[in-house]
Image (cartoon, rainbow over all chains, first blue to last red; front, top):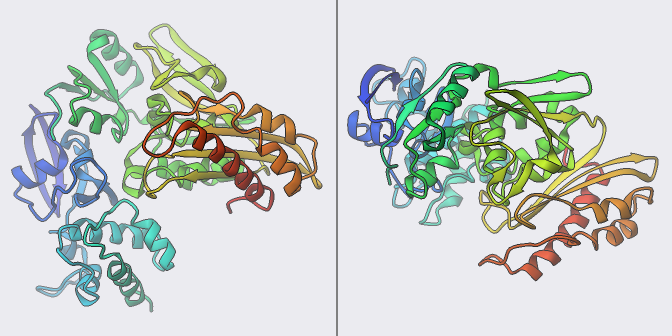
Length: 161
Length: 287
């Protein structure tokens, strides 16, 4: 077992983990953060996307020990990153996915939202093409991309002055 | 899917890493960004007893200028290489290719050195490395040695980096002002290249003074399309001479046949993509 210390959704945690433990399993099974899901389990689909030190990563393709010392944001803590957030208020990208119905079955949604937040952090006003290419690492098997792209556009517009 | 159990060590210096590698030898795998290794371990296609994580060695990261070369630390993530202004200025072809590697999440974790040592023939960095004549700095217990791109890739998933050695730097000769393009053909945007072509050309007026062309997934290793380079050098930068040169793209290649296409299909594709890549580069490149 290896001792790791990290910050997850603003909370300092410290645990002994087997080195082979994947970050997604640590988050779900040891911390109970089941908002992050396992989709394909082959690092293709992006459903398990979280932020590690401010960057999107596929948490099924990172060992928990590699995240030692890092800061992680999952879909469960995303809304808490909003400054001066009111009780129950969603993150603007979560709100946009709800407003534009950027989902069908919802399974890809946690990863789609985390990837979209990362995309908008790097490119606050993307074109439709840039959104589609920026989300290339996330698959929706309901073929719901159209509304997902609209949701990202909606969120980007909302952030304009 | 969960990897088989292994012991883990995360050294903070290259010396410690080499010592760990010396100690555990054949039973160890080096972990760079893990974006290729971890899937392989999860599918139990590889089950090392030791994993030596290079992610805590700061000296293996970063990009700097040194004389006529750019020096890229082997553990520099794809996203950092792809967004680096020095790379864009002096080795634009790498900027172009990095944008096509997998997806944003993978580019955040995966490293340039890890991808090159993995040496997947469908990987996107080998062809640019060969086209740019990159040099590879390899550290071992006895010191470091430098290997030219033409001698680095030996076979499928096999490079000049020995079992007891670590790739530390990729040194890329500056080609400032060259026009470049990486033309990748895939069915699904974030997947491996079916075929891809990396080109860099230096124009003098309307003439191609120098041309360098690398091929992805046209053999067991990344290849140089020397026939195309010879046919284009000194010729006018026109569609006619590009088409004539591109017709030689599959010379000396040995492309694989798989569900994405057979060898004859890939040979044809290489010529088409070479023509497109050269025309895009000549007319201004990717930027």
